[in-house]
Length: 274
Image (cartoon, rainbow, N blue to C red; front, top):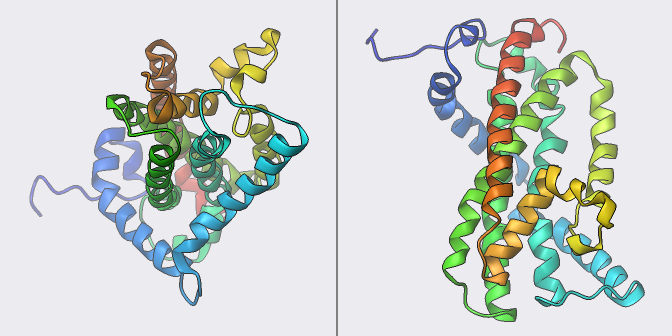
């Protein structure tokens, strides 16, 4: 066997670094993602259009409530592009966590027969949701172009914003997937937590509606930082706040490291509980 070839089993994951493990398992993550995407739309009439149906439905319902009933106004952009800029990152996070929390349990028959890094399973869920994220982001850019005007150089701000979003999503999804193997209650708690998170995050309403005494929520909530950064980059024509975004990035890196450290500690015992 060549010296530069790395073979990983669940036990070996405790011995190697996080970066080496991610590089070595990426081909398997990509293959698993392709498998999940093909299975998702198999025998489906609308196929990938289902990626739009749920967020568009949310947009129509909440848009009607906030504009027609509650008379919420947004000064810097038409409400449609404003709300879509919030729905896109939140949908990616909620889809990844909602599907990833029970992903290892669902793969129980495969886990019991094969030795491979178990974190491939929740990571493939995130990468699968990432495909939808790219599509929805493209729609957001086109929508902002039509309703607000041509994009500016500040659109590049989506890159660091997206990195923060992906890092936090990976950290939370990997942690939830690992813990759920041993504590099944988490699988029922996550949908409730996502509903609460949707309410306290300015997805469908401006962040300025948060009371002054509760402004700290906007700073510590990564999704709020990501959504506001998305709005800055896409149609406000300004750079996302570098201080807040930088702090969230450092926190996200720490969370990713902690999530994989926890996963690798729990991994050897997972096959006994799935």
